[in-house]
Length: 319
Image 1 (tube, rainbow, N blue to C red):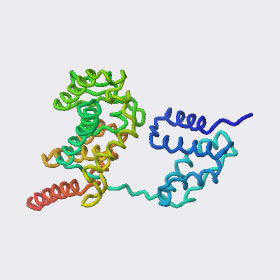
Image 2 (image 1 turned 90 degrees about the horizontal axis):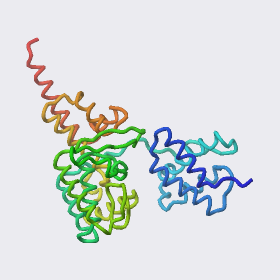
Image 3 (image 1 turned 60 degrees about the vertical axis):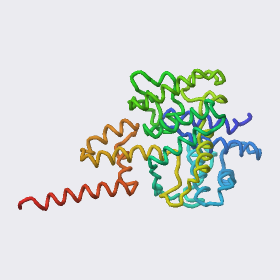
């Protein structure tokens, strides 16, 4: 009996994990590359440690030991699943290619000027005057104004965008949770203008997805990241003079930081308001939202000033 292809096994694994609520967008890309590698070298049968290590080290970036270790960890999770079905599967031991640092890198918090520059460069994309520039302007603006995850905005459908009442329905994304995302009136108007322009573009393929271009019925992750890299190069955005090199996901971080900063500056009860913010963002735990409080210097400075005012008032009270 011919053993199933690795592509089939990867599909089976992804379906099983997604049924438990995991998104696995990043892991899917790596595992499909792993399957192609196994097919290319003619490997058949169960996962082996030799095969996993060979693939983990095959990337041009795998000269970096951390990158190779990360790639191996993705195959390790896949191998653990396969071992439950096929006992001949070999699971690479933890630490085989070194340990993966657990410290999360500090995000880049965009200034208003940087967001404006990002949108201006998006307007200059080709074809000039076409749907693609309008799509990326609306797409990046939505990420900045709502803090949506990249995948949530990409998979948004026309039926999910209520542009009359200004509410987005985000369906079963991370952790298979759905939620409603109210929009600011200016965001609603901007999306309405984009939708009118999109629907008037006869060259765009008909599709259920809200964001699309002349060439694609929906935005793929690869296309979005490639476009963002191109814009970043034009703007000369590097890590120099910044906490880190700007990423698309940092628009989400920036949204949260600006909201928390405003609440701190207004003297609001952040502990109460952060519950609503966690729901808005689709966080499974409030602790995930609180991480932003310690992630950037701006918030640390604001909370420190607030504590100083509290301590000063306390010292003036009669004993």
